[in-house]
Amino acid sequence: MQMRALEPRDLDRVEELEPELFGVGAWSRQTYVDELARDDRTYLAAVDDDGALLGYGGVALDPEWTIMTVGVAPQARRRGVATALLDALLAAAREAGARELFLEVRAHDGGAQQLYRNAGFVRVGLRKRYYQPEGADAVVMRLDLVRRVGVVGAETTAGSDGEGALGDHAGIADERPADGAGGRRDGGAHAPVSARERVFIDVDAAHDLIWSEHPPVVLDVRWALGQTDGSAVYVRGHLPGAVYVDLDAELASTPSPEEGRHPLPTAEDLQATARRWGIDDGSTVLVYDDTGGTSAARAWWLLRWAGVADVRIVDGGLRAWVGAGHHLEDGFVRPRPGAVVVRPGGLATVTADEVADYPGVLLDARDHERFTGAVEPVDPRAGHVPGARSAPTRGNLTLDGWLLEPEDLVARFAGLEVRPGVDVAVYCGSGVTAAHQVAVLASIGVEAALYPGSFSQWANDPEREVATGD
Image 1 (tube, rainbow, N blue to C red):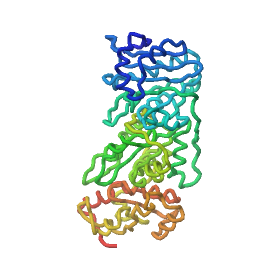
Image 2 (cartoon, helix red, strand yellow):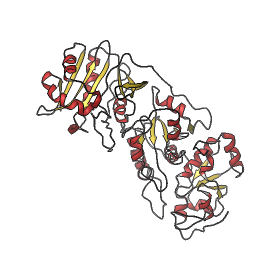
Image 3 (tube, helix red, strand yellow):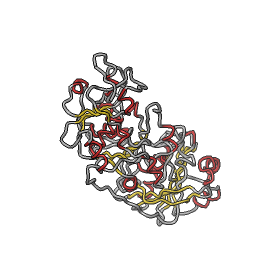
Image 4 (cartoon, helix red, strand yellow):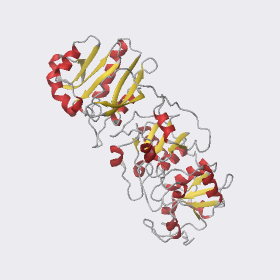
């Protein structure tokens, strides 16, 4: 691939691509003729060895300093064309003396925004109904060329097929300028001050953090027992910048009767996965789902166990985010890889043998009907670990999926003789909802250990006794 100036001879191909890439936002041939004639513009073409046009992009120079457009031909997807074009446009702006750059990108387009985040751009504003005539909202993004020196990572694509199309009008195609830079909204990262704030974050604080100068890594962990693939709903709408997490494949190792349905992944596998999500040492991580945090908590627990210090669950999850009127992105987000080093042991665990003779309070986080043995949808025997107390995870939440108030949680667990200083261990069916129980207990100052194998391991061992009833 080679980079050169976009020339009038390229406009036949550009004219063909514009409607396909940008739809109603396509520029006319005459617009490009006019643009190429301006001295305060730089337009570049990416071409293959045969001279065929792979993509094109433009940047407005003094005084606008705005990325005008980046478009990539469909047949050139996933070949690094968009990243190369963007890198070249940033270099052209620097050479011209730019100290900052702006752009507008469709608010729903996660893949396009991630490409720019990988290059160091941060969100600074939201323009309602900016793109006409479709009336799509636009996110304003800014790059500080003085402090940020072109951290361009892997190319990111977006699209409902999971692969995406750089240049698609609903993907990265059209970053066209508007007057001014948009209003800055820097929430700013601030240290949590209470036990609850160290574990959970409300949507307004999450929104401000996502829009801050140092946005967090955001993980979408949509999963539920019997409905394990959340990627289809993720691609249709997720929190800005959120990376999809496959709970079964990424938050657990291979299931077995001996280890349970969701054994802990190895440290090596978890480190590779966390780096793929874009986590570095010192990253702030937000996790969410659409089930009250009961599946997102598995990611919270694993990362905290692995030594990642600042991980928080978005209280209310996707429902709360949408209810607050915040916009969603679509498409898959593939961030610049991180370099986190995993250090297991940050949270306590217990084994089956330790659970069998547990000296403290043992909590069963499954629904009460499974605890009593009245129903058992997945495990070979119904009931519970002898000596356990029933404490369904959903009892920590309101009917709408929000976390109960601290005083209500303290009262709930006091009724189970759980308070700070008491030894507590928690299990569920496979170590997923129990992680939420551990998180909730941490939010009221109680340290609890997780039994990772949980009942799916226990019930598969014929040597282990199973109790039934209340």
